[in-house]
Image (cartoon, rainbow, N blue to C red):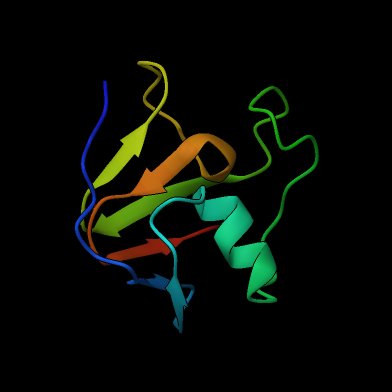
Length: 84
């Protein structure tokens, strides 16, 4: 499914830090590019280390799993998330 993203920049509140990111990149790609300290390993959705909890906002994720993986999830709006 394709979602048209109108905004050129979105905000991700990640563990209390705000990052302005591109909606065309996964959450993992965006946060790594901005220097955020996010846990990850494989980057392809198999290890599960980049799992996060969405507090606010809307995301577009691949698959039907209840887990949200930063490596395969895109922000649709400004979002707030935490990673344990």
